[in-house]
Image (cartoon, rainbow, N blue to C red; front, top):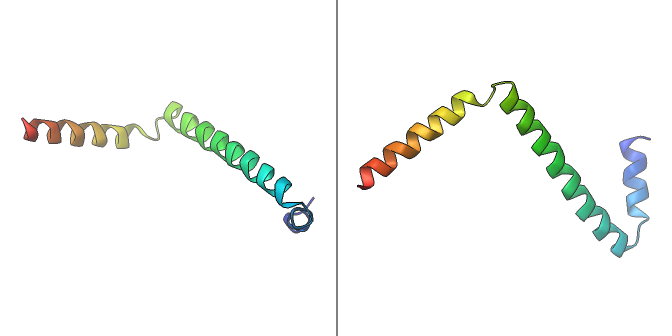
Length: 65
């Protein structure tokens, strides 16, 4: 099935079904995002960003004291 075929099928749905599809797709997309973040964490791709964030967070809290 092509994207164009999916788009055509969506246009034929009732407003209620479009709302259900939108809710389902939002959940589906969230699960994809979560899986990508988990994979990136496991592969160390986020290590440098996490370290920078921790350093920045710690320095801001020290400045407030």
